[in-house]
Length: 234
Image 1 (cartoon, rainbow, N blue to C red):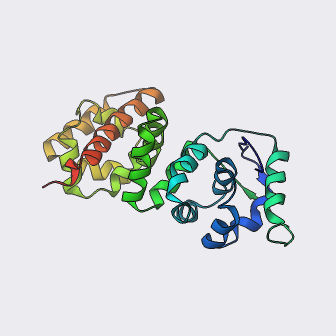
Image 2: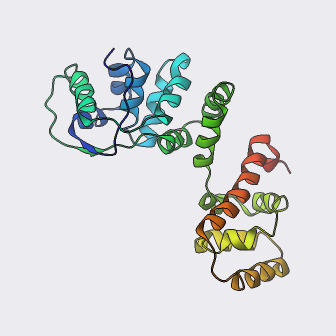
């Protein structure tokens, strides 16, 4: 065991560069026999798509543990991270010369899962939900954000907005990107859109926390519909 419990600061570390440059199969072979916390540490350095690929190549029995450990990574002395990187690098036998940035935590886990096959990712989260529902809820909140609404087609947006408290929409849209605002307004009737725009103009000064709360309320509805399968029903 390289480490019993390690977490990472958002600092530039040379010790992981050589590993991140490897292909997913090579990374998997390098770390597959390490302890889950060590694997999570290495995975946290990888781009989301590569991290998801590595996770898929690891034994199914440890996948949810890796996601859990990744989501719980917290700041730790950089010396520990360098020790892990150097220990693993001895297996490769090449010199480390460059550095990169690493971030662990909820966002890393969410970004990785978004790049994975949806059925596999959902299976991991469903199993985790039985043990650590709060953590899973936090991960899911980062997997689908307010900006992602613009990626839904008009039919699904219409279906979702029928379930949304329309009083929340002006507040949610006041700080939205043009792309999101246009997508959501196009998914409701012209009259309703005009009403939302008028309310936005009359809101005046608003608190960021109120905007975030309104956006999260809208996203929560969409997320619930998506998880239940209702969003894709005709």
